Every structure is written in structure tokens, then in C-alpha cells.
Image 1 (cartoon, rainbow over the protein chains, first blue to last red):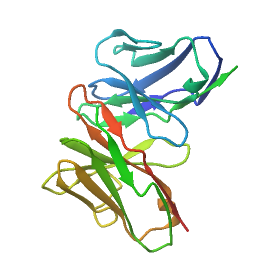
Image 2 (cartoon, rainbow over the protein chains, first blue to last red):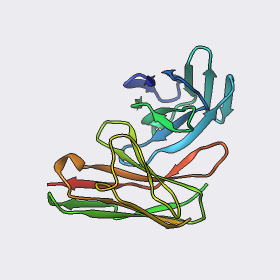
Image 3 (cartoon, each protein chain N blue to C red):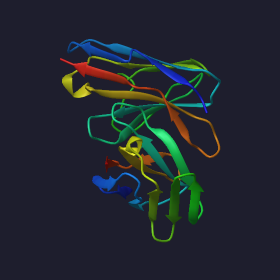
Length: 109
Length: 114
């Protein structure tokens, strides 16, 4: 079967760094995405990894290890507006998106 | 990227009625999708809306319950038919822009069935 695991909730302090981990089990793989979803809003695209390694985009970075079925999203210099759910999503061999339940990130001053 | 609008943004409907949700994109796109997201849950793909042909439904979703239209490359509708309280959810339209397969989402329609 196909499955995604990520923590349900995390708390971090404004200005700090937080890493949100995601592990997946899949019979095929065509990439891994991270989306951000603020409460009551639609998801917005953050990153896409298809090769192993780290992709950096401003304060956000995403890492992928295909052999380990593992990814993380790294958020630096946390701001209050970063309080949101972060969804780990992988694309299977049929190019279908499989969505994780999301990690609710709470930022405290 | 693409700008996507959905109507209505929210509605409260009675059991047994139907609601049609509209999704409009500001540019022509090949792929359009309809998702459902229940409170505190992840997104579940309902179907892929295909222009000029029937939609492709995911397991657990059928055309009689969720008929979809896609008359052109910028517009689609999803109807939630014969509604029950279990259909209360947020319904999201998204579009795919091709490489690298990222999707852009509309603001969603919050449906409450009483």
C-alpha cells in the first residue's frame, strides 16, 4: 500500500528553525511536494523534489532521500505568519498525488 | 501560476438537495481536479475533470453522486447530488500546470449539509 507519516503537530519559537519530517511508503515514485495551508485557506505550493538532496528556496528548504523514503521541510527564521499546516505529498507511479494529513505548526513569540 | 476562483465560497444546504460548485481559471489549463477536505483531514481527490470527455473518478466516488462538467480549458463544475450531512466538507478545485506537476488551488467551497 501507499502511506505517508508526518507529525500531527509541532511548536516552535519565532526566529528559530524547525524541521518537519515525512516518511512515505510507495510502490512507485515520481516526486515529493510540500504544501502550506493556512487555516481556512487552500493549500499553496512550497517545493518539489524528485532527486535526492536539498532544495533551498529562501527561508524554506526541502530534502529528499528516495532510498530511505524520507523527506523534511526546514523552515528558518520563523515568523508568526508561518503558523500553518504543512502537507507532505508524494506523486506515485501513475502521477497521482497522495496527500499526507499535514503537520500543524504553531509559532510562539 | 494560475489564478483560480470558486463559487460559492460557502453554502448551507438541506439534506436531499444538490449544489453545483463552479471553478474558473484565468488561463487555459490541461488538468483540473476536484478535491474534498474534511475538517482536520488531508485532501482526498474526487476526480480529474477532462475537457471534452467524462471525468475520471477515484475509488469511492461515482458520477451519479458527483457529476462533473468541463466544457472548456478554463472552467469546470462539480455537483454534489442528493446531499447528506456526511457531504459537509470543503471542496477544492485545483489545476495542474505541467512540469513539475505542481498544482494550484482555488479558495475552496465550504459546504454544510443540515
